[in-house]
Image 1 (cartoon, rainbow, N blue to C red):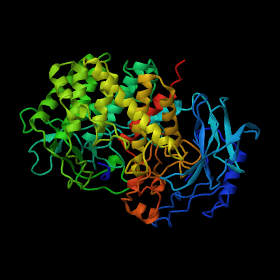
Image 2: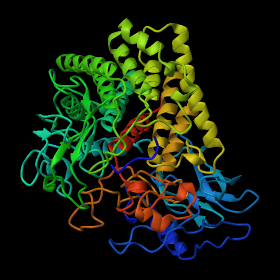
Image 3: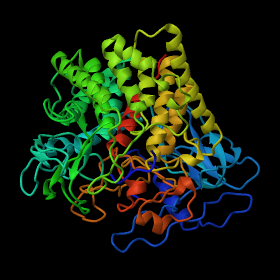
Image 4: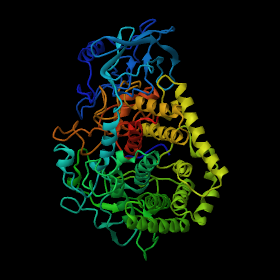
Length: 631
């Protein structure tokens, strides 16, 4: 992945649409301009320039085809059903929900919301939540304008639950991706096993001056659009997938993530498939541990990637670059300690021997990190891979301590938890969310949900901090035209992962309290990702009427090479980033409103990459939203 800054549209859809409505939208698109329609509907001014000559044109980021913005995949019958309408009207407008046949199924009046700070658009909200019937091809019509077609059904998120998790099998390194599991377009030979032209990951030397030996670090997931593998990004991604299963198990719904629910080679082995997928990365993370008897024994190498950046496209098995291990870091070591400890706790019922091995690795990593508490990855180490530099690791110590305490109940780890300033800090859960560089929230969520020996008053305080953070996200959403759980200044690199991680906080609050407002907040967050946004675009490939399909990736590079595929269904684009930190974004998006700083172009790595730590929370949320509600 390129360095981080925070610490076109196919006509086919995954849900059946109304042909006449889609045709109407296409005809209407030619009429929509940036000219305000006095007292009526309007589109935001365009922000993009001409497409780059280096590649076919991507979707114009301002080419929304209707001012009626909905979740294009659809809505759950029992969930909130709201749409955002871009309009300068100062009075409520009439809306109609029309079925595929054109009949009016429901009607009402919009609520005036005013200017949405993140998009700069004047907005209304149409709320048709009281309509609970199911069907396909619904459209919402406001003042003559039609939304994208959408469905209303209880199984709305079942496919996404599978697809978002399948992303990780696609990203596996060191194993062939089988056509029988993913289809011929996505099949490929194993990458980085030392088969020419690869120089391989089975016998990788260090950068000059780091070590004088080689290490077998095969396997794991490619981090993002490049072929690097980074421990700190792998850590939060593994934790999120394993936590998704642990949450479902607490809720009594883990069978949906169980054995033989995914198309992976390990299906049928008696272990839940989501844990099998996580283990592919866990095995790699443990291979990144410095061997006994070597300098910094027990620490984890920070990352492994090519000695120089490769071009796009580059298939994994055709990458000729030398591979290098980068010096150990305290942050990477604590990620290893935390995820291996979580492994010990969650894997125990399914593979006791593996869980025991994980706990041994976690203890060793914790001891090594304590002995080397300030070994930081340099921000200058950005040739061939992102630096993932982080000089604030007290949060990582807190996270690792909570996982070791949850796994063992031992007093030493409990003392490390309770003595950490993060244990009582209000900054563990923030309005802008958590990420690989800010991991105190992971410890807080574990303590709130996993039985432990802390005093009852302490547990109540921890849980109250989760619900308070969730209430804060709901308040943020209520003040916006698009109901996004991040503030207007939260549109940073990977903003969609900030949305998804904050939605996880709300889902956790729902699990703690059963209060429906938190579930509603999660569902409206999914609405944003799937089309209810200023671009009228689903950020999830394959879902919706108009979705991102040219994400930054070296194999899923159809925009540059027609013989290669677009990203598979269920791949989440990084999303709007007001920093504009790549040339394509700078060329096309200058002057964009924060929520519109996105372009579906393979060259825009700062707005349109895919990564494991963005898809992991999407998979977590898809599993949550696919569950049928409690009675």
